[in-house]
Structure formats: structure tokens, C-alpha cells
Image (cartoon, rainbow, N blue to C red):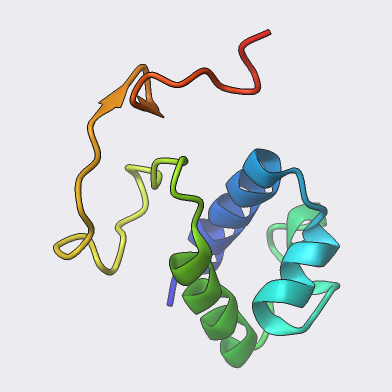
Length: 100
């Protein structure tokens, strides 16, 4: 399970990258459509350990393959994840949807 600051950072990045709303992420990851809305609005707020655990596990299992895991947050499966060659931070140098 990730710390709440790490869970918030992962949730923000996941929502930004995939374009989903925080309520959708909460619903998909732990069955609570308010948890990420609340955590994003007030990072000092808390959630149940079970909720954070389910959301953490879901993010690990469903992390986008074309998005690098943040270096500042240790990945629990770091030894088992295959390394993909990245150019300019993207897989195989592919253009990002942010590259106007």
C-alpha cells in the first residue's frame, strides 16, 4: 500500500494521463466515487486503510503501459517489471497527446 501523498500523486497522474475524472478513478479502483475527489481537494484528508489498499493495488495492476511509473514513488514490483526503452520519456519515442 502507498502512503496517502503517494496515492494522491499516482491518482492525479493517472487521471491526467487517461483523461478520467477523479470520481471515476475512485469508483473503478475501490468502489468509492468520492475518495479521490476528497483527497484531491484536501490532501490532508484521510481515507480508510482498506480503501487505500484497494486503490493502491488497482493502480499497480492497471497502470497505463505507455506511462512511466513516477521515479519518486517506489514500485512494489520494481524487480519484476520489464524495462522498456524510452526516448523523451515516452515508449519508443511516440508522440504524446500533449505534443501540440
